[in-house]
Image 1 (tube, rainbow, N blue to C red):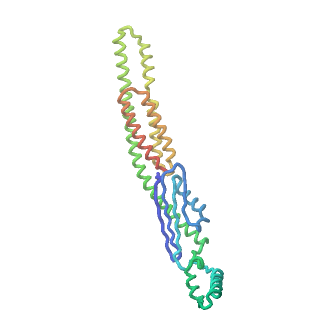
Image 2: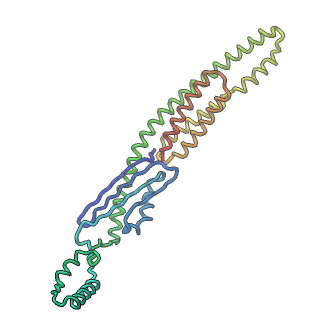
Image 3: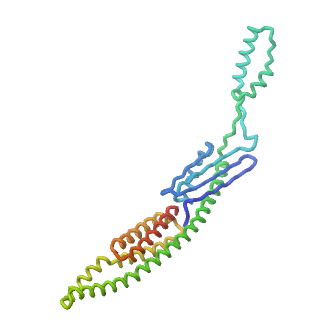
Length: 294
């Protein structure tokens, strides 16, 4: 069993790149992958998504990929000489026309222009070759494995909690089953005694048994208890599975809750009502936990 909450981070650094991949996941009904990455990784987006889908089957996945080029040799320098020549020509022409005595020094002007990003542009080299792609995908895969490991660890903790809740619910079903048998016997005896008290020897034995059977049938909850036992067995089976069971668990708890509600509506004894309240409380705790199960 895995949780849908997890976190994984992986960093790679060499003489050319620093690659940081951070992935976090939270609960979501379906798989929703959100990628935040630089444009040089765009060619590998579909491969990254497929890689994540192979391991993470449910949840909202937010992945952040940052890449920095660490080597100076990975920079491109582009000097816009045409603009510089044009500007210097305009300056020299204007000075000659209006200030013939001025001395124009192109060297100093060029030195100043080289510090202006409008004339000198320094950019990172955009590398997207096969080696670069394999490197990025390898780092992403390691981060995904860490997310998966954290989801598995939390899932095991949830499994332990659900196992305890399942045992508590099973104990209540057993308690309720034992009480129902005793209650039906006592109800039968009280019913017979009350009718004998009211009608004495005029009681029709066959009619008495028929009326009593009708009343008992209206409040009979054995069928619901039997189904709850089956559901409990299914719950224990699902808790042991390694494949995603979140949706199936959610449906199962709905069915169990429906049976408990039926028991509550059929039964009048306060003892049964109290057990039903305890059952519903445990089922609600289970429901809250499984919202985060993959």
